[in-house]
Image (cartoon, rainbow, N blue to C red; front, side, top):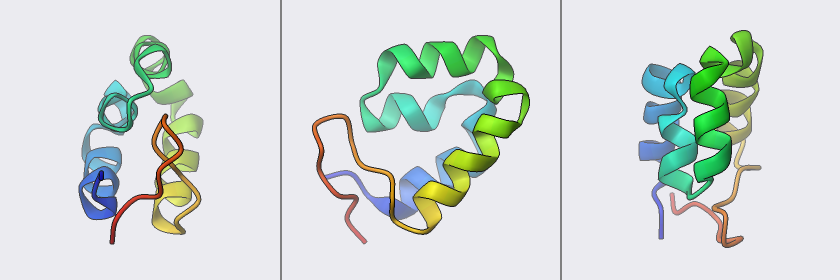
Length: 66
């Protein structure tokens, strides 16, 4: 199980580089996020919010552990 706090911290501090997506198993989206520098900041912000409110899951569909 992936930890929600780890994912949130990765998203806040390294989200522009796609590290949060790599952590959650979304390799392709992580590369895309890296190339676009967090979707020009918009994608980064959306991911931070989604992880914080608990709507983001791992690629295999698992909920993030609290």
